[in-house]
Image (cartoon, rainbow, N blue to C red):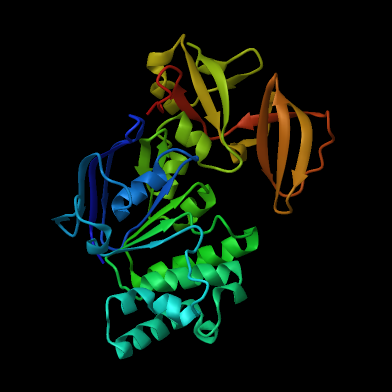
Amino acid sequence: MANLSLQHLDKIYDNKVQAVFDFNLDVKDGEFIVLVGPSGCGKSTTLRMVAGLEDITKGHLIIDGKDVTQMPPKNRDIAMVFQNYALYGHMSVYENMAFSLTLAKEDKNVIHRKVLAAAEILGLTDQLNKKPRQLSGGQRQRVAMGRAIVRNPKVFLFDEPLSNLDAKLRGSTRREIMLLHKRLNATILYVTHDQTEALTLADRIVCMSMGHVQQIGTPLELYDTPANIFVASFIGLPPMNFFDVTVNADGTLSNAEFTVQLSQEEKALLSSYVGKEIVLGVRPENIVPGEAVKANVINVENLGQNTLVHCHIGNKRVTAKFRDWCEYQTGADILVDFKTKHFFDKETTKAIR
């Protein structure tokens, strides 16, 4: 496996549209990095630049200390797993997995050993003689991963590999990818728009928007200390709730609908914002039964262990996530408190640290 360094990467197309702006990332040997963000944010373009499928307009790509920016894809020693599997329908599973080694004129005994080893890792040993059309979507994706494994590349690239699978298969295949990473200790760059995949798979997450990196950190860092309103709203399901509030000299936050008390630590943090408007962010699980804020119930989703309560606070629609089973009636008024709070500068949208 390998270290990987993306240094000041830009991607500008011939029509002058810029898809990626000054992308910087150092990936350690064996690290699992997930690029996440909405469609069109530049994450797949970045992956394709690493693969050599897109030219790098500006910047440098370093693999194991070697500058491969101008190197063709076949010489970069990477393997890519695509969203649509990209399997050859007329070939068997064995032939698909062996294909790259066959092209490289590898010894047949070596090919056989590598394919059998990969098939055992992925639970495909009894599927080797079948054609792709005889397999489920999850099995086809495992074949695509097997084709990458047999090459023993320096870097694995995954481009939204689970997006064609149904929810149950996504869950099981995600777990297989986690186990695969642990078993191979592989260096992986993985692209997805699904934050559940990002939070469960990644050693570190790169959150992108409009071609720009918004934050790089561990899943917990992005969840607990988002760098700005975009990251706070994108990471977390249900998403964070936001309120425009004024910071008051008496140590409270208020708007037309509620007033909440700040802790001493929060007062100190917001001391330079007294008299100004900021954005208050509260995750659904941090809206708890209380007495400070009045909310009107719109509807309730009981999920067994938790209950999602959708309600209005004034004209603002918010979601609370209560523990256990709750039976609130639509239209009922309830009182809540805000536990852990996040604060953002209204002009810059950056977190107030």
